[in-house]
Image 1 (spheres, rainbow, N blue to C red):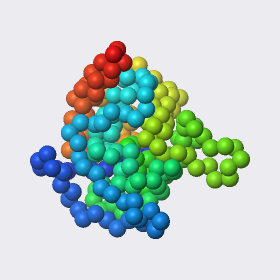
Image 2 (image 1 turned 45 degrees about the vertical axis):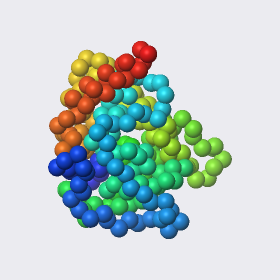
Image 3 (image 1 turned 120 degrees about the horizontal axis):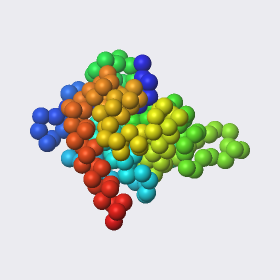
Length: 219
């Protein structure tokens, strides 16, 4: 059962990314088929699209994406490595899972933080910076890169959502405890059901990302 966001599983034996399974057939709206593309692995999580914010939370967001979507087009990423160009809404594309504990199911995980459709809808209703008008019958939330970042930044910054102040925990140096806390949502963070080859590197990656974010904040 998916509790929140399911990670894209990365396996490689060299700097070249090597997928251990054939790319699955996608359940797509036919009007979007032509927009499918692909993404390439990158050596370091890309900077965020959103400006500003808490540097500790920003570093954590980049760390999450290191194991969930460490590609050159993370905001456009579908589970399995394909990308989609249309980001006016969550793509809601259910991709068959062909490896790991949930093989045989499918997942709608998409974007830099691999939001399931239902999770995106729930969190966007609470944290989205540009909510649709009250008069719109279908509450469609923009899935742009900046919107993805802002929703996650606000979610991680909300102590009521997690039962603790994550930023303060990070400032106290509790990165491992924070990753464990978040592993029920992002299952590739080292304490969940879908650990991958990036998981053990996340504390080090967080340290590197935090240094970058603090330098940027001071600059």
